[in-house]
Image (cartoon, rainbow, N blue to C red; front, top):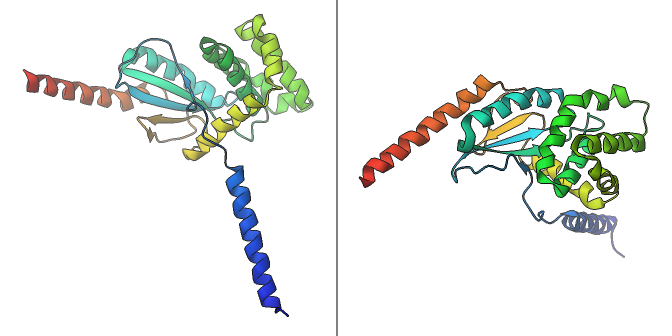
Length: 233
């Protein structure tokens, strides 16, 4: 007859194996493409400075950070490029649905992606927690579908409506959240430049702030290019 300690050990080992197998099975494969939306359709330098922005479409700070970021992108032109990542914060009740709508539109038309993001920034108060407190989840989604189709074009309406019934769009939105978490991002807006996080996460950065970070990098690259040119002359 086996003793109670031996039985307990067997049970603990069985639980550990069950937990380990469950975790392994739950691991999702890497997505077919890297997360994020590339801003603009103009040509950029192959070694352009990379800005990554983690944004929540119903976050006031993300909204306030967007205009100066666009101003910086216009100012530096092909010397910088932007990839935007969506991080639907859990305490913004409708952030996930709004982010999902942007993913749906991106699959249909890349140029419409940032148009819809900007629409959410402009009218995000409609989807704040207090304003939708008495609405059901379905009612909120229906309102997002209706409003989003008005923002990017009525031809998107049926695709937006069906997109919210497609599990793939749900998974893409989850991937964006998990990707943000994997980068250690927990607030919006958060910015990375060439892979390094800028300070003051969760706060809007004005145009002068962007110049403070980018001008020295532009100058450093220009000096290096000049040095390389003298080497070959």
